[in-house]
Length: 295
Image 1 (cartoon, helix red, strand yellow):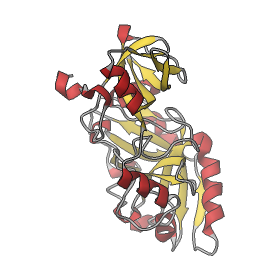
Image 2: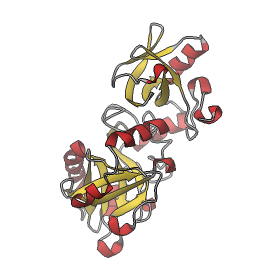
Image 3: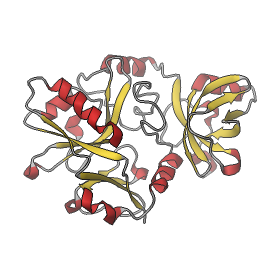
Image 4: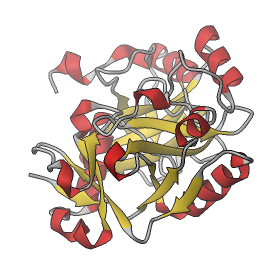
């Protein structure tokens, strides 16, 4: 029953009387939908609508203060704390990077731990990902049952990208990173930084570039960041890969044209077959899905 300590993840706490309204006016997810029982996937964007940081938001129970805890890539935790502090102005909030005292755990195909273990919730992006928890750093070893590569292989097989791995922060829009598909943007909430651009992409359907899962011929995945091509045309770049599967950031229209012309899509020179995950609701090049193949 796999569980891993995600040692590359950090934690930023936002507390205080105005914490809820403060976060809600900044991030893509609806903080009203965050509770001690339900985490939420979200991001802080640039005013131009590109992702600066993505994270999972937890809330502590009211009896221990009700603060919000953002599970973020650890190397970016200080920058996230700094950026949030920049926005706080007169808001009654405190922003702290607690990455040294708290740890992030992920588990799947097993019951999630009791709430007494820390902040625990189902992964808000996709139920099949399992559960996520924030625990005291000294307790992390108890949950480190498997190598972290096992988690990323599980994530990649499900077609779920991660910021800082499958796309660059400051370079991708939420739609390109599949945040609209993975419950990372609440389109019915109030204003937040970058909302106008994201809403326009949603209503106009202008996301031509997206991350898509693929299966590599021969069972080996290409290196991160190499070209995805069809014939002499560039389609995009590779993201992470594991166990013969990978994630590709590509132009959907170019991939569709290549497949219609009978061309082979290659990632790092290796032939790949694009696979639409069952949860994806956007038009997919070739429309080959794991569900249709019974895999």
